[in-house]
Length: 195
Image (tube, rainbow, N blue to C red):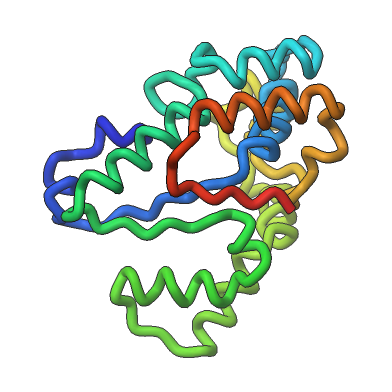
């Protein structure tokens, strides 16, 4: 959800927001494979073509429009300029590295009473491989997606790893990515984790 369409009450501190961020290179690879898994393919071009779209504001998949960097910059501006906003930022890479610790931080932010046993059970239930396996069962099938997805199963699980971009981006594509992200997010307090 783009920052600018948050309800005004949320911006005044009524309610809490969990903002999840993932490094843009893995988002790019994941998004490309996601769009290519639909029937018919939403995007059928090569990596260079999709990279141009992804780095521009043409994609529009990050809310009401704009690129990953535009979306991220708007959230950074909103968080920085709004001290009343109750927001907890989760970095996907840190969640993968220390799922228990990140879920514990989330529970504290949400003022949820918890035990080590409860958090341990949550860690088991949200493990990527477990969620992917459950998605392959009948519970992952819905009539809503049968016209664009095989068996009505939305293709939301692929690898779930950090750093898969290294398997798909060329040196030249990676350098272009770095240059655009540096230009668009220069001077911000956004620390991205790529490995």
